[in-house]
Image (cartoon, rainbow, N blue to C red):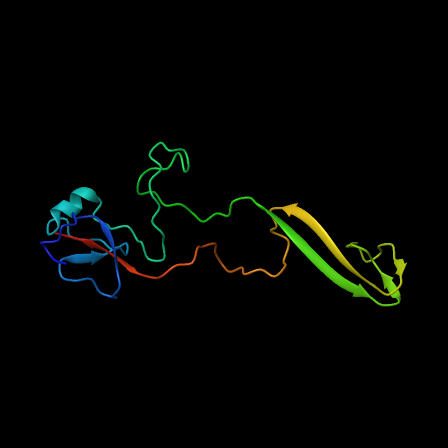
Length: 153
């Protein structure tokens, strides 16, 4: 992939190595020499490439209405769409007293004989619920890490 590449200058390309080939730059937020790379300078007149490290590229809405109001090349913070969860909670009680779904330390106690319960409830959002989840520090689909590069000349 060099000067004879069929890809135009400015197209982000996933690259499987840490360093780009000759004539290509990383999309890492670094400034570049607009005199040395005038075509790239016309695309990014500020002389700085976008930083695509750890980012996903999303197609521009362009009037479709899925992600309206965004400008091309604009950054967007992460978000989780509002949703609901069905959560099943099971517990057993043996010859004792148990507060049934009460959150107060002074909740009424109900005498119960040996039994098991399965309780199902639905709540929206689910941000305060924790039940066999696979949460992390961010919301993301499964993915494979590549280095985004751009043909500079």
